[in-house]
Length: 367
Image: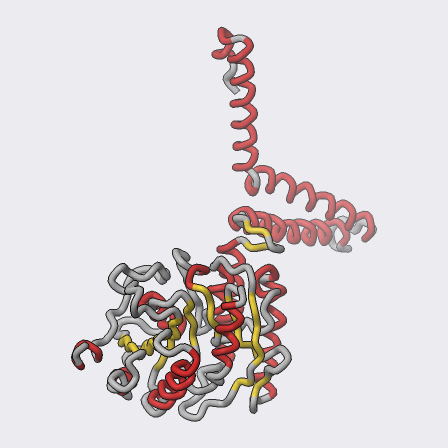
């Protein structure tokens, strides 16, 4: 392979964020790596050489020739992609992608996976905050049968080096909220905001991913075919260069992502079903109107300036009227379609029965 060819940038995939099987040209059985690790970067020119060197040395010892490193850079102003590209001649397992028209860590990871050739795919931080040696434990866990292996700060062997009280509180709050909003998915994860994991490619093949914010683990576990999850403890290190991307806004995005997954995937208590969002909103709105009916009628009946009835009697009457109000509105509006479908089904069944028994009377059924 010539120098120009080896230093060529990877083409940026387009279209849906969907991981597929490698193309026939990429699936060369003699040279195809079985493990692909994506390193998303932005303004990491100061430490990209170090992270590539550390990862290459580690993986060369454990799986020589069996891996590839894919640096996906969002067109960094500091020229991170150029710096990474200059390292290819020294590290032949390195591949570089420069994204000029897209931004965001989550989408960068998925674009890297789309270009990956390995059966195992993963992601590691480009700030040296994720200890590289944990990779070997994650790989072992997947080889032993897990669909995904996640590096966790919240199990034995895990922790954070020097977080502030506020950041620790936010992280723990995210850990608690996850299982409450999306129990069947995040009830299996101790560290749902981890950005360090490895999974089998087959677990997400053909799945259209739609991440929110910069954390992608939620999307992978929420939408992928993930049965068995393994976790490996690790200590999160403070970055050596640059500033932290973590702010309270990222935690808001995390909650938004949980809610989005809850309603779009319909995963409730381990069961998958389509949530009737329109009916839920109508039902809630009807209930809201019932509050005003109840309060307004209670005031009208009990206030000294109006009917001045005893409070208990007024409350009973107001409550009953509110219940009747809610029933009639729900019957006529919220569940109108359900009633129509039921009537149509009953009519169809009756028609079929009558047609079978008395074909000549089929025209007598109008309603």
